[in-house]
Length: 115
View 1 (cartoon, rainbow, N blue to C red):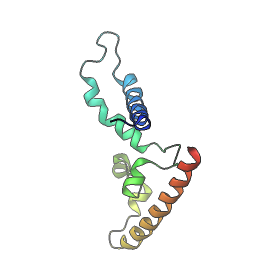
View 2 (cartoon, rainbow, N blue to C red; view 1 turned 180 degrees about the vertical axis):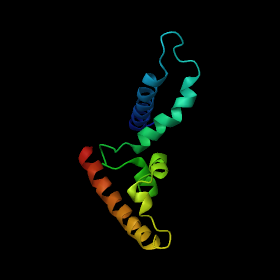
View 3 (cartoon, one colour; view 1 turned 135 degrees about the horizontal axis):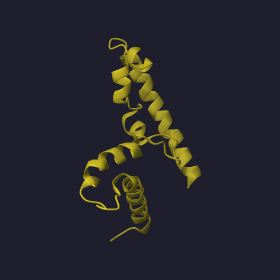
View 4 (spheres, helix red, strand yellow; view 1 turned 30 degrees about the vertical axis):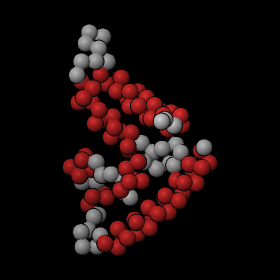
């Protein structure tokens, strides 16, 4: 019916979300109200952008194969944004896919060492 190890992982993930939400929504007069709904996407984004201790990669990188580009980088023209070339993006994309496979292998090794 339930796997004890999996329940612990879910409880840990929920605890991390709550740990991120509490400082953002706590107010002595109006403790929780409905503010958690507006703050939840920000907390989830921060969790997805934080490198994991077990794998040393972010969840975003492990899913999409590259690091996320923040809106501030687009707005202020960071060097990685200015250097992007639409025509020559195919070869770096293939390299990134190779690096993703390598990163998955490294992450699996880190995870085994972590456990």
